[in-house]
Image (tube, rainbow, N blue to C red):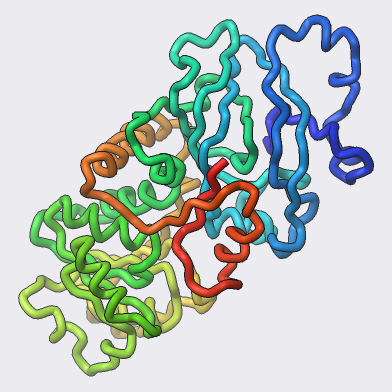
Length: 372
């Protein structure tokens, strides 16, 4: 389902109007007469075809949507621009809504109005779509009550908006592949990513050490310090690991049992070099767009295991309840001040600037979070 019951009827001659979403429902006098409750008009970032996000997205006006008995109208407060959002617009993500579509996959909003049959949510509640769903880059969203998860209003909105995709991925990867116990060590590349920052802190909360690999860049020493302040035990640039025996750099830390790779190429090979005999490397991304190379000796003499993780596959209907419990756990950590990561709130009117930053066109920037 792409845009549940969203009527793109105010687009005049836009292809969106001609391709889908009939206008008869809006135009009919019977609809106007019998509709008991409508959402406000909305503004949304849409794309009518796949391609470069900065070329194919645009801001449009959407008409009001009728609220059925079990519907909840949510005024969006904030929603991030994730790499997976960009990949969906480009048309390269494995699961994506058919076009035309509204961008965005997660976010947080405030209940604006409710249908007559809604019993567990009230106007003013803060909610997130759970599991996440397409179309969060708009000012008002209408979905059924069961599609929303009520959260603590005391959490900063940028964390509530971003809790599902990245922090939940970090938590699941630490839990799902091997049994870690206090005193164990994990190793990861891409440590400055949101998932990387989350892994450091969640591991620390479990008494697990972390070895972190970052790419060589200007300001690398400052980056190391930031990660250490989050709880990282060791932080190395890739060039520092161009030694014969990388494990000599571990000091008193045990050899890592579990590794995480979101880069590929040489950065993935560095993770493998750290792993102990029988260790496991989990790949959840490929930012370098280079394949993972594994030496024959690593398989034969170290008996390493290679696994993959994709949150969307994990987050199916039978995991929905568990997903919400874990989200609440992460948000409690946020509220306590023991869990954080870098983000930049950007006004909705400046979406194009935020998108350019997310695409890397304006240098390196924190996670871009749209504030409606």
